[in-house]
Image 1 (cartoon, one colour):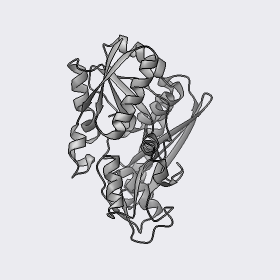
Image 2 (spheres, helix red, strand yellow):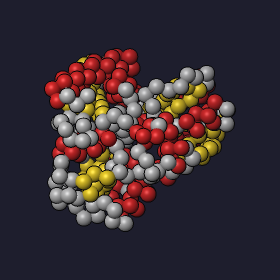
Image 3 (cartoon, rainbow, N blue to C red):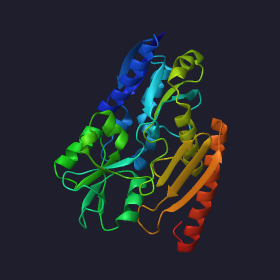
Image 4 (tube, rainbow, N blue to C red):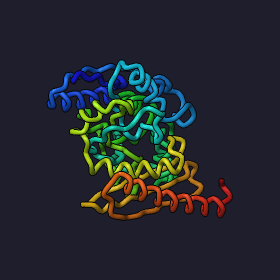
Length: 307
């Protein structure tokens, strides 16, 4: 089968698309890439939460799918909106890389080692909120751009440290830049972080069948629960929300956190556990966690009169 993959043109996005291409070719398919620049790649001077959110990274790719110029689009799942437009579906979730966040610094080997007032770069409201909870004395500044751009800004001395997804660094062979990884108990990952998702048009059953060999069931169950939390909470990058699930056998455990980027209150954290055997059951568990999280956030808001 001849297949065309729509992909962003950043080095990491191309690595991900090439990875999927190689796997599909192993199963006898003929695969080409269609590189594209998205709005999310072009707008670098403002936070995503202020200019349209995660959809800025996928819109152009969806147009290529709709027009038939491409058959599938490979995404970092944490960049995929919780609700896809009519006519599109998530056809495949692949095995997850390291889901954790990483501290990258040229001079300090841990968050605790950073001096008071050190400048840390990140544009994720989730990371800002969780960082403030751990180190309220740090100065957190925005950081946009692709992975290489962010590392260059660090190397140019604009920051004492930056926070990046460990998965992207490892995929590009840059694992040596990681000074420390944050365990989920400290820095809970974003929904879907470290996983690759493949989007197709809903009417392309032939493409879905071709992708079925790449599906990793355990990862899909985990991220289904995580994305359910995010969807119920509003599901955008303008929310300081974390959701992360683990799976042992059929037992899924999910944790979620809602923080305050301004540091007015400590992050609200909830957990739940349950046996899951389907995406629907994983989603239901995520929905239950979201309800508990909403109750906790409302209680904090009422107490502090901040919402």
